[in-house]
Length: 284
Ligand SMILES: NC(=O)c1ccc[n+]([C@@H]2O[C@H](COP(=O)([O-])OP(=O)(O)OC[C@H]3O[C@@H](n4cnc5c(N)ncnc54)[C@H](OP(=O)(O)O)[C@@H]3O)[C@@H](O)[C@H]2O)c1
Image (tube, rainbow, N blue to C red; front, side):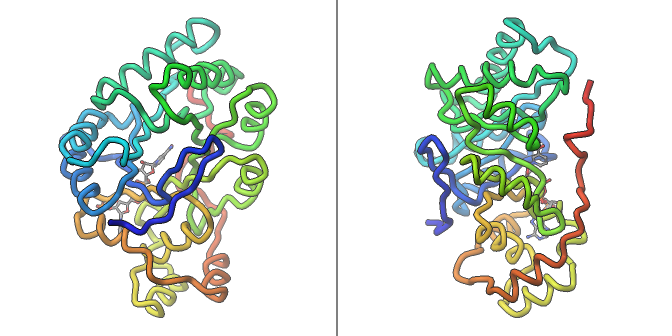
């Protein structure tokens, strides 16, 4: 079984530090991909309502033959701008979306439910957050968190709500390491989870400084990048539909990046995002 380390969240729940993401995997392909991932040893799976593959993901979970309590399943609320997310209507909408996701996944509880984006941008994310946190009461979700939140929005939740998110899932990789946000989150007990941890498989994986480190350790660049996430205390959820890569991305134990490696990785930072900036993006 996998020797992947775990992170204990601020509510005592434990999440594997390496999980499997399924963004852009069509529903029918999600089943074989997630099945391969679970067979390889992944125990944490990250999907979202907007990925439209909760059914295929849930099918793989059901067929995996792994006890439910050994798996950590995350999905996300798509709090779209087309609905009213304010007041009682907004809170009811959260419950409807949650029920729909659970049904599609074929599960009777989730390990983690995230608000996908801090949208709409005009303040109602606090109402949505209170409704998401309220889902903890009936035991059908064990932990709640957020995604794409910046420091201002996290400050609002910390100040206004009695429930602090267990984690914030954001774009994070060596080109865009999010150090300021990670430092803020560490001060407040909010774990950092990286989306696009491999830089979406783009130029990051042929970055000369990383190629050199990979050659030094006899590993691939993807393994070096995922090792960097683990040693940084970050939870990473790489995606692949390629069975050999699914296994490769889990084989990131048994070597250690040294101070020289870490300094070289820090130097590749560009500060450039791949995805949209959640602070400036108005989804309405
Ligand atoms: N919360 C959010 O807003 C948000 C946004 C984006 C992503 N996410 C989550 O984060 C997960 C991961 O992010 P991501 O899918 O954007 O990108 P990623 O995991 O950084 O990269 C995935 C890409 O890299 C390729 N790849 C994977 N392993 C590789 C390897 N060992 N060597 C070479 N190429 C490799 C994959 O190709 P193949 O599949 O063809 O093998 C795929 O094209 C998503 O699936 C999703 O669960 C969340």
